[in-house]
Amino acid sequence: MTTHSVLKPQPRPEILAIDPYVPGKSRVPGVAKVHKLSSNESPLGPSPKAMEAVRALAGSLELYPDGASTALREAIGRRYGLDPARIICGNGSDELLALLAHVFLHPGDEGIYSQYGFLTYPICIRAAGGVPVVAKETDRTASVDAILAKTTARTKIVYLANPSNPTGTYISFSEVKRLHAGLPPHTLLVVDAAYAEYVTRNDYAAGLELASTLDNVVMTRTFSKIHGLASLRVGWAYGSAHVLDALNRVRGPFNLNGAAQAAGVASLEDMAHVERAIAHNSRWLPWLTEAIAKLGIEVTPSVGNFLLLTFPKESGRTAADADAFLSARGFILRAVAAYGLPDSLRLTVGGEEANRGVVAALGEFMRGQGD
Ligand SMILES: *Cc1c(COP(=O)(O)O)cnc(C)c1O
Image (cartoon, rainbow, N blue to C red; front, top):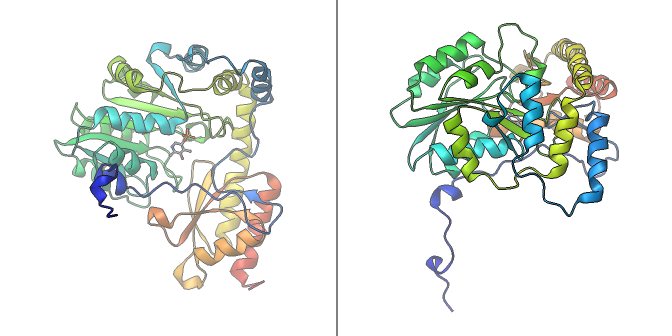
């Protein structure tokens, strides 16, 4: 029997051009205890109130959740002073980032993302039939000038992670406004503020004000990072009524499960927990930055809950060797070669034991011990 390709269902060609997203590793074969510092998860975990809310739901799993995530949208609205009608919740902000491309890109339209920006963006753009366009960064920081230089009549969406991942850098609110001012009105600016809560700079803004007042700005947020709910998948976006209307037509009718909604609401009722997570990060981010820089590793200044470490060529030590060395000792970092950063690893700020341990192990590695 002959098999010919047309006898099989054929995905659209642009789908097969997608490199699948590879999440951070979570285990090392043969190593019993690991510190997972590869996915920017919270070392404090979720609020105890969120855990209780999930437990309380166990007795009613046969019931469909509220398809409109009403209680969660109202809780977010109260917390940030926003109109709940202009909030959409997603199965992680990833779902919303993808929906935005599906809704606003026509076939062949261009979507711009920044050079080291989150690898989800080109996946979203391609999956929607669009053409991903990369804007070069300066000092591992998004460049407004480079993004605007790449903007054409076909540009329908611009994704900006602010702060960015994996670099941890950010651009100021005035730069975000300058970016918006330079974009045509038909281009949607998506500000992905997944790490906003961690930023302690007063020239930073997550994008609420722009998303509140402008037709072509959407801000996305997540409960995966500071709220410690990555497993449940809770994200949300805020934007103009016409953007929200389009998104609500295409999202899954029950896209947020009941546990996710309940845990999200409970998390917002425990801002003391969020404050603890911010305080923990504000203590350990500078500690790690300084301790690791002293070892001769380049550390990109970060405002998030993670650091990009770069192994200088002249050190004779490579990121790949460091990854193997640290993994064998139970410290899992994130390789970022897929981001075009083959000499770097990304390290999530962990708990005290993990932070002290990973610095000690990096020290051994740089001194060439245990080779
Ligand atoms: C972690 C992260 C997200 C959050 O994704 P979820 O789907 O909400 O878990 C979004 N954007 C960036 C840049 C991230 O690093």
